Every structure is written in structure tokens, then in C-alpha cells.
Amino acid sequence: MQAGNDTIGPALDALFATRGAFAAEPPIILPAEPYLDTAGEALRRRIFLTRGEGGETLCLRPDFTIPVCIRHIEEAAELPKRYCYRGLVFRQRADGPAEFVQAGIEDLGEDHRAEADARALADALAALQTAGLDPAGLNVILGDQGLFEAVLRALGLPQGWQRRLIRTFGHDDQLKAVLDALAKGPEDTLEGIEPQLVELARDREEGALTRLIRSRMEEAGLPPHSGRSPGEIAARLIEKVAVAEARLGEGALKLLEAFLAIDCSLDAAADRLAELMGGAGLDLGRAMTVFETRNLALQAANVDLAALNYRAAFGRPIDYYTGLVFEVRQPGGSDALAGGGRYDRLMTMLGATQPIPAVGFALWLDRVAADLETRGGAA
Amino acid sequence: MSLTLAIPSKGRLMEKSLAALKSAGIDVIAGETRSYRTSVSGFDGLDVLLLSASEIARQLRDGAIDFGVTGEDLIRESMPDADGQVDFVARLSFGHADVVVAVPEAWVDVATMDDLGDIAGSFRARHGRRLRIATKYWRLTQGFFTRLHGIQSYRIVESLGATEGAPAAGSADIIVDITSTGSTLTANQLKVLADGTILKSEACLLCSKTRPREAGDRALAEDLARRFRG
Image 1: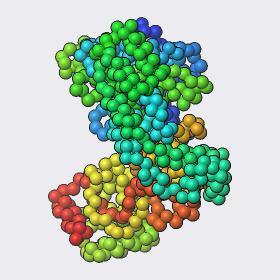
Image 2 (image 1 turned 180 degrees about the vertical axis):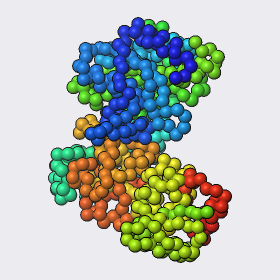
Image 3 (image 1 turned 30 degrees about the vertical axis):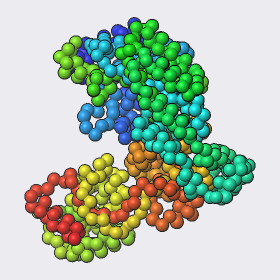
Image 4 (image 1 turned 180 degrees about the horizontal axis):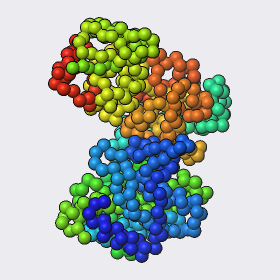
């Protein structure tokens, strides 16, 4: 372990205990299936996989969030509940070490989302301070997928476009590519689809399309009750034809680009958003309320909004993240010292029978320790 | 001083490899059946081994052999950084095959990777599971879906044979597989997406960059490579 952790670790454990978090101690070897299922196949090349005797795929713990959530579901523990953890996680990298020390908190089942969000961010900053870093000197960046989704809704974009844009949120290059495609217009999106089918879709002949698709599926011997159904395919074709023949107004595109370009201190963000949306006569509704309530809760937790950065395009392209995301680094630093966010969709993906709001953060303790060392301020 | 070169141990790939060596002035006589050794004339200090095409890719990666003839698909599938690990000495103009993304023809709304990305993104919400892709090319699939097209939400179902049958068998929704004429895909009522060609593969002569060689062997390797570079 890196220098510094010997004293930092226990100090963090003590801090987390005072914040009402219960210490979770998940095993190091875990089933890989929940990771691959929730985070996606891209994770496969970044984690250490092995096979159990019975053929099941196992991995070295790549993070704490998933085992903490799974154990919570299995134990059917009371809600709301906060868990904390500290220990090793393992990730494959082309170079550099493959094991890291992480510490953090997962906050499950708190219905007051804005307050829980604020607490996660405030606790992350407090943890960095406990570790010996001066929070005033750190660069904190914050994004909110809820606002992005609200802008798309307010603009009245077709569902197909909304889904496509949301899918790339947090991935600047891909988002830009999709925007470019929308700006260019839909010319070739119907290429490769039989004209007869396009006609039926244009006339919204859902029944006829469904029958036609069903007969093709039967002919190909596709199992009727697994995967995409004829009705689903017909409905999407109709939507696709409608989207292809709609046009994204230049005003809408400009507004979307102006929104994504917002990059300002958090205390100025609400005004900037109100100005932009108000100018276009649009209302972001509940997403804006959540954003402002969260800011108030942050102030109540003694977080200085002027010292945080809001970037409208900042997010994580993983589909269980739903709202707030944040990262903390040294100004100009390439590696995040801490990161967190809201993942309201994860608990049901992992088997919870009803939706459970969840937000959390993790500190990269090796990076924190290395940073302290180079600054000569090791605790 | 000696170099090892591995070529596929059976079928047309073996015949064509032997022909390619012959046209470079190297005569290889395969031993009796079931023997993986050969006798070589026309290039002193060269041992030619007969191995399976996928084993050749692995041995090149591990630096266990100097040269190998195998498909680019297998090379790129078995190495994280193929261009850093092997030198593509020559493309041999046989063993042509494309690695492609194919979906059921009944998916009439899906023509491009963008369509597939849209479906993958909402698959879980609709069906309670991820979109499943049957393939033996998990590295190529991931690189193409994740890095090139930004598609995260799918699962790979490892398939070791008859991949094209996976959708009908219900073990996967779509496939990533090789095709040379497309007839197997058509017979299984699968269609290749317009931008769904991951790799246009053919047999290549490769030289391992990770194999340690002494000066003498290095010169010998240069000689051999030159015969193919023409």
C-alpha cells in the first residue's frame, strides 16, 4: 500500500462512522455476471476474470458499489441505509499497477434525492480533507443527466432521437457525432429498408407490418417468445420512418448546443440555465427544481457553490447513472481523486423488486496518497 | 541459427500456404499424416511446423515462433495490440473472409449500427436482459461495438461453432461471425448491417515482434521476409 494510507485509512473509517455509514466488507472474489450485466461487456477487458470449479465466471473485485448493493438486496435490509467501505479493487490496465485502494460511501433508499446528492458530494470533499488535501485547492466538476434529458423533452425531440442522444451523454465525441448527424438531416437513414415496408410504416399500418414480420420470423425459425417481438419491430420501424422524415429545427439544434456548452461555476449555473431556456420559452420543470434544491442542500452542508464547476455535458455513458455525477481532481490533473454519482437504475438491475434511489462516491486513495507525497504534505 | 515458421495444418489453408511458400522458392514436404514436422528445402535454417490457425496466432503473440501464416481475424482477435506485437510481412490473397455483424432478416427496422445501438440501449428495459451477441470474436466485437460505435449495453455469448444458428436456437439475438460468400448467413435468414463489416480478413504472413532473436537469426528473418515482400 502507498505511504500515508496507514494513517489515512483509520481516519476515513472514523469519518464514515460519524456520517452514519455501516461498514460493508464484501469478499475480493466475486461473481462476474452482475458486473458484465450492469456495466456492459466493455468491462470484460478491464477486469480480472477466472472460472470457478462449476464453470461460473468469477472476478477480482473491480469496485465496491455492486457487491454492496447486491448484499443489501439479499439481506433485504431496512431503508434508507448508508454503507461505507475501504479496500482493494482490481482493474487491468495497459501499464501501471492493477490494484488500487478505494474508500467510499453508498447511500441507498433515501427518497430526498437532492439532499442525498448533496450529502454524497459534501462527504466526498470531507473525506479528501480528512485524508490531508485542502478542498479549496481542488477542482470539482459536476454534471446532471436529469437536466440534459429535460432539455431534450422540452425541445420536443422525437423519442428515437432522445434515446440516441441520451445514450451518448457523457461521451463528448460520440455526442458531437450524433448532433452532427441530426444537423445534416436524415437523408440516408431509410436506406436498406424495403420500399414496401417504408410505405406501410408511413401509413402507420402496424397490424399489417406485424403480420409480415411475424411470418418472416416463423420462416427463419426464430423463437417466438425470446427477444424482439414482431409488434416491437413494427412499432420501431414506424417510429424510425417518422423520425427520418421529421426535421430538427435549426433553433432547436442551436439551443441544444448552447446548453451543452455551459461550463461555469455552480453558483452561476441556475441563472445561466434560466436565461437560455427562458429565452426560448422552454421550461425544464422538475429537473430544474431538483438541480436548485440540490444546490441549496449543498450550501446547507457548507459547500461553497462558487468553488464548484457545473458542466452541462458532463456525464457517464453507463445506463444506470441517472442524475448527478461529479469528479474531483487537482487543477490540471489527469486522474480523478474522487468520483461519484446517482445510480437510481442499478438496484432493480441487480434484482431489487422495486426501484431504490441510490447515490455514492469513491476515493482513489493511492492517487490521494501520491498527490500528498508530491506536495510534501503527507499526513 | 534457425527460424520457425508455422502454417495451418489442414485443408485449403494448408495447401495455399504451401503454394505461397513454393512461389517464394521454399519447398515444404509435409510428413506422414499426423506428423506436425516437415522437411524444408530452399531456405537453410528454416523449420516449418504444422499447427492449427488459431494456435499459430497465439504462438506468434507469445513469441514462441518466428513466422506464421494465419488469418488476420485470428491475429487481431488474439492480441490486444496486433500491430505492436506482429509485423504484417505480406498479405497472401487467399483465405478471404469478412468479420461481420449480422441480425435476423426479420428485423426490418435495423439496417445500420446506429439502429442496433438504439435497440441495445433499450433492450434491457423491454426484455429484462441485455442484447446477446453470439461470437467467437469477443475482442473484435468489443472494439467495434464499444470503441467505434459507443454501444455499451450488450452481452457476448461465446460460440465455438455454428454461430449462425444461435438466433434460431434462441441462445443469442444477433451474431458476429466470418463470412466469405454470405451464403451461410442467407441460408439462416440473417443480414449483414450496411456498416457492419468489422474486418476484411485474409491469410497473412506474420513475423513475431516479441520473439527474442540473435543477430544471425535476425538477418535470416530479414532474408525470409524479403522473399515475400518481393
